[in-house]
Image 1 (tube, rainbow, N blue to C red):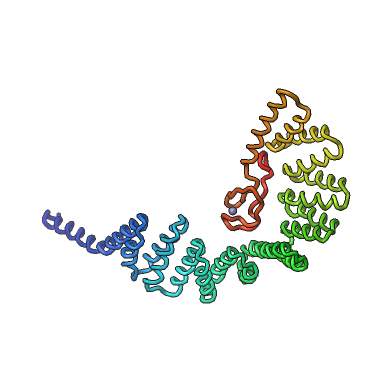
Image 2 (cartoon, rainbow, N blue to C red; image 1 turned 30 degrees about the vertical axis):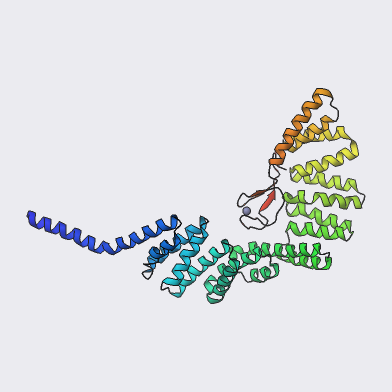
Amino acid sequence: MIDGGLLVFLVVGAVGLGWFLGRRERKRSHYYEMGLRHLLNDEPDQAVATLVTELDFEKDSIDTHLALGGLLRRRGELEKAVFVHESVLNKARLDRATRNMVQIELARDYLQAGLLDRAETMSMNLAEENPEYRSESLKVALQVYEQERDWYRAIEIAQQVTGGAQESKIENAISHYCCELAELAIAEDNIEAATDHLTKAIGHNASNPRVSLLQGQVSLSNQDAKAAVRHFERVLVQNPIYVSESLLPLKSAYQLLADPDGYRQYLTQCLEQTPAMAVVLALGQVIEEQEGSEALARFIANQMQVNPSLRGFVELIEINLVHAEGRLAHNLTLLKDFAEAMVKEKPGYRCNDCGFEGKRMRWHCPSCREWASIEPLLGQDSD
Ligand SMILES: [Zn+2]
């Protein structure tokens, strides 16, 4: 049996020892708590004073700071993320591996904050210094050059990025950098340079539909309608989703060849593979030109049964309006205006990766910065 006095002594002793051992930990938690409160209250100076006070300690707390910095960046609080990572880098005693880990995080902060010069310097230095971080650093630098639209430098850096699973993604990006250069050359009427860039683009991704669209454009400006048709029609094989982007210039090419039947045949073939409203409308136009408005009405009504869409609905009202009079014409016009307004509100394009929506085609998503992730919407109501 332990007597009462000894029991009290043992309990008090244990609590005292626990308090003594936990004191340092509590002191540190106190700093974290205060620092976090300052950060969240938008008081970066005070946050410095508290968070950084304990920075010459073990690795555990540096990991905490890295997690905090990463969290702040993901939340878009970039000034605070930069502040936390810079503080760790400047104040803590770090081994090389940890310093490099903080540097890549800081380079990402700079990039997201639009501090492109700093992002470039930090990532390029890190790529030189530590082979382990080379690929990740070069990807940060690549995004800098993409934002600066420095496509030559982007190609140069992308070719140095190595890494199994990412390889096809990088190759596709290089193909698009070449397309960007080709577009610039086309704008300057430098067809020779454009052709050269497009040949390189194919070398990096032979099934990039953007290349075919640009090659078609180059052929059209050379008055080579036959070659233009060949390039534009390749899009259907490469990715039917993008056929809608080719239809307008393809029609011009067939007009140059005076071959409306060829155009109609190709559109029919497209419709078998993609239910895009753009194809339905283009084919409808040809049917109307060749067979008249009744044939068009029949065609659109049939298509609406297979793939109902708001655009098809507008088209049907328009066809019926031609023959309507008086009150019926008035009501149909109201209905058409209403449906047209609804069509206008719909986005025409959406990014598969981040959901970004827009009215026009972009090959580079302005939100998630992926290449060729934005696609024309083919579905029920959209295009
Ligand atoms: Zn996106």
